Amino acid sequence: INGTAQFINRTGQTFQTVPYSLAPRSSARIVSASSSSAVQTGSVRLSSPAFAVSIFSLNANGVTVTQAGVPTLPAGMTFQSYVENGNTIRSGIAIANPSATAVGVTLEINGITTTLSIPGNGQTAQFVNEIPAFANLPSTFQGVLRMTSSAAVSVTGLRAHINERGEFLGTT
Image (tube, rainbow, N blue to C red; front, side, top):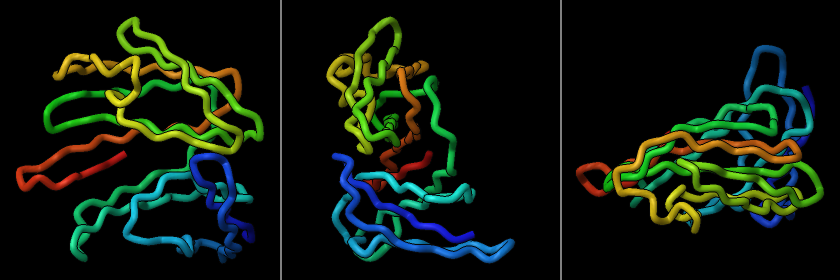
């Protein structure tokens, strides 16, 4: 399989396109040339139907603190995710819009509803309690976040934990 991987920033601008080639029953590593120690958010779009797992890492002082994988999932219009808000555990979501036009994504938790506008080819990634409508969720909240949109989007959930040493650990 031959194709390209597009690295797209939050606002929907492609900042790098990398070609790739996969032999049968093999894997490949595709890395953005702008990989650095700075926190980066965005999305990656593959031009072929290859199944992929994206790996993100957090390094502190040259030591990998946490690492998690995100499998390729089809875009859809309805999603649900278990979410928590607590002293050491937080849930987050990342929503990517693969279309060229902006799309509104409606989020609902516990009867509270809000809509996020995701720019064409753009994305957003936030902890649930950072979304203004959900800022006042109880500090020990556990529930289901429902997400719907009028156009297909891609969604990834994140669970973050601050361990006893104060390190940020994350998984999808």
